[in-house]
Amino acid sequence: SSVILSFQLVDNGSAVLDITNIDVKFVRELAFKSGLATLTPHEIQVLLRKHIGSGCAATPTGFQSLLCSVLDNLDIPDEARQRLFMGFYSIFQTFEHTCQVNAVPQNKLLCGLLIFAAGKKSDKLHLAFAAFDSDGDGSLTAEELGEFFSGFLVGLSATHTCSGAAGLLTSEEKVQLGAVHDAAIALGSLVMREANLGDASKQLIKFSEFAEWYTGGGYTAIPWLELLDLHKWKLALEREPTMPQTYDANSPADSGDAGADPSLQASAQEAGPAATDAEDEDDVVFAFELGAEVAKLVFFRSDLVRLRNVLEITRFDRLKPEDIFHAFRATGSSSDHADEALARLSKSGFDNVIRKLVPGARLTVEEKLFLSVTLSSVFSAFDRDGTLDVSLVEFCSGFMLLASGSKSDKLALAFDEFTKDSDQVLDEAGLERFLRSFLLMLFALNEEACQSPADEIWEEVDVYIGELARQILEDVGAADQGLCFSDFATWYTDGGHLVVPWLELLSLRKWPGILQTERQSSGNDGTQYPEAGNDGIGSGGAGAGTAAAAAAAA
Image (cartoon, rainbow, N blue to C red):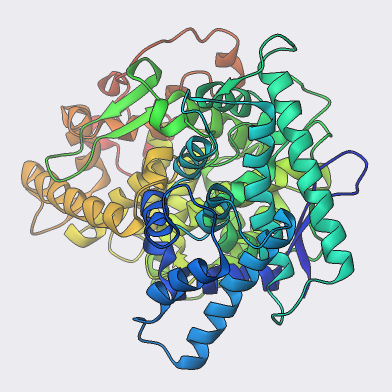
């Protein structure tokens, strides 16, 4: 096995959390084959209380009863069931060792099991936080906060020590577990001190205060919390770098720019413990109604922060739209096809291009993790079949949102790419692919969408885009002969921008504070509705048809 993630928990290096490729496979096997990955955090807590008792410590007998209730009804071979049983029971025994008694506090065991559950990191943290609130006042002491961290850290450490053959802990593993527990207790005091701004008289912390500390920079001290999101284990396995990614809890993310931490809210799932649930209407920047069958597409300030960080690190906004297509075609990893609009791009090819465009030597560890998670999420938005293989034209059309250039330039270039083998016109299916490529990219950049089941998003997008394509062809009268770009441009400029205002976001200038020149003067507040009709598409009306004709457009 090889270490693919390594977290240094304290500055003296005595406590380290290592995650290997074997550990990742072990966690995913336990989570998905047992069915825990389908349970919400609350359902995990209910399961514990049913078999252990409310507030009671978990004994070996009680935990075995819980495992039997979960595993006995699975339609899997007995050998696989036994492996799952031993895997979970070994984790329980690891908790037993740290407690030094023949029982495990239920709140700590809850933390360990939440690693395997479905749901957002914020939901898991909130539930566990409440479980350590012994007096029910909504706050934790420094000691309780340390035990809260210990529950998750011991659980994560157990996935490493138990991923091999089941057996007793080695002397070295026992020493390491002790160091991990001590580090967790120290973290409790550290967070209490920092969250309370050094006020020694304040000895309690609320979850909202913990969330504020975390989103304000605390994520750099405890990046391992991101592993509460099962999706991150899959991304770590897909990346599997030749050298482990090491995280030092005491090193700044970027000493050269303390005011713009590049790992801020390091992915669509990483905006902090309460960011998704605590966003209020004052934080909404864009809101788009996509029809009765589709949820509203809403962008919050945290989404803009994440996009800004992507651009600051990658400098993709210095590329031209055509550079995006050229880079991914030039990698040699895209599959050839007689019809260029049907060419494919593999995940490995995508990764190779990103490494060339964004040399790793100039990135911090936090930046590497941020980009790995964020850009992999973008690729996954187009990988509907889970084959790690996407349409080259559809992906590049969406991905060039990150490049420089106007909306008109990007739409015209994408239209050309989709119609190279169809006489420069799109039929209904082609128009759906064209429009879907842009909308999928927007959903990939949206935190709320990334927290939703992918199948639901794809289904909703398909319904919406199908109706939209039929409406456009009907409005233009092109259902039979197909749609050319000049007709699409005229439709958009003459009122279509009111139907699809989200297309305005193809221009980075429409995102407040994203471009460097705008960050210095942006003062926009509240919900923004882009003035879509002001620049239209193209400058020649029906006479502007191709990328060349649109080059002089807005």
